[in-house]
Image 1 (cartoon, rainbow, N blue to C red):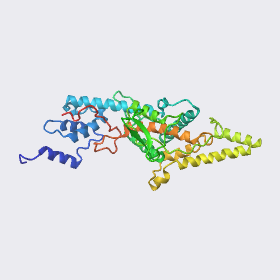
Image 2 (tube, one colour):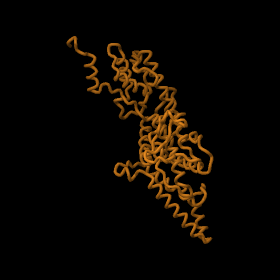
Image 3 (cartoon, helix red, strand yellow):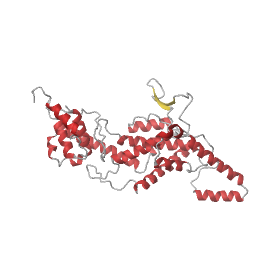
Image 4 (cartoon, one colour):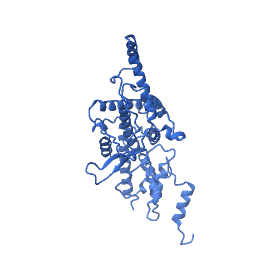
Amino acid sequence: MPPESDNVGTIINYLSARGIDDARNDPETAISMLGWSETPDVRWEEGWIEAFIHCVGMYSRLEGCADFRMITPITRALLERACLETQLRVQAAEERLSDFSYDDIWLASSGSATGNAARDAAQRLRQFFVNHYAKVHGDWPPPDTGARTLEGEEMWLTRTLAKEMQKDFGALYDYLVNRDIVWDESEARSSRKWMIVSNTDKSFSPDTSDLPLTDMLIDFDNRMRFPHIPHPYPLVPESISPASPPSSSSGRDRLKKDKNILSNNGAKQGGDDRINERRAQLAYTEATNIYILGSDFTQSDLIESFVKFEKTDLIGTVDPFAARRGRWVLIYGILQTIASVSVDAPSVRYKDNVLYHLSPRFKGTKAPPW
């Protein structure tokens, strides 16, 4: 080749055009490309990052590769650090999602009756999610996927499962979210930096005396170091006073109660209860985006099951306004957790059919290291 030719550039173009730089599920290719990309005569930044991301995901399989010794000490250290950080993040998400436990998000709420109604609604929804995913996967958490940490511990929250859950809860978010409500940030404000506001209704407040939603979400996001979800508030049904105090009685018990009421000339009360149930079910339906989304609405098994659950969950005995807000708190926390592990690195090129996570974080490090 002529001396003025860009030999390295020609090779890189050839590798990319032929897909030879595709290191998916192939630790030998990934580590070889990583080592070659960081040699002084090459310094191929895009190739290094692509290979690095896949090497992090397959880290436990790298030491047996022949070219592992080619890697510079700094890159080896970066690999280990990124792998451990990813595993810690995934394990933290697993701990949350194994039973959808978010008790700590309620620390800022009060113990009033309405606050308890919202929290109780979230607890019932938590069990619904466990049952739903157990039905889908045969058990929850799902059976052994074969993924392991560096220490050989099982890691059931694979990238594939995280993506599936992201799709499920993303669709549920679209179904319930109020897109008129946003975060407003102001450093000059003396009370708090962040506030939840409406773009159209200046009198809107997301907080009630029993459920200080703003403080709850800010506290949770700050502790977890999550960026706020852009639209942090749901569409809410009208407040309907319960016909009778909430109870944990089953539908059969309530049916028996209705029969007793009828036998004691309480037919009017029973009729009022059923009217309240219909009102609550209608209020839940109207407080969704299904009419706005129209043909763009993404149907899913989770949404279908959620709709049925919400319209039967102590219907008529719990204020739907309080219940929807309580359920939203749980959904918000789940969305944040899933986002922490399901979002691939923006620069990764090859990602289809990859089970391992592709989300290493380079924060605070120079990558590539040259």
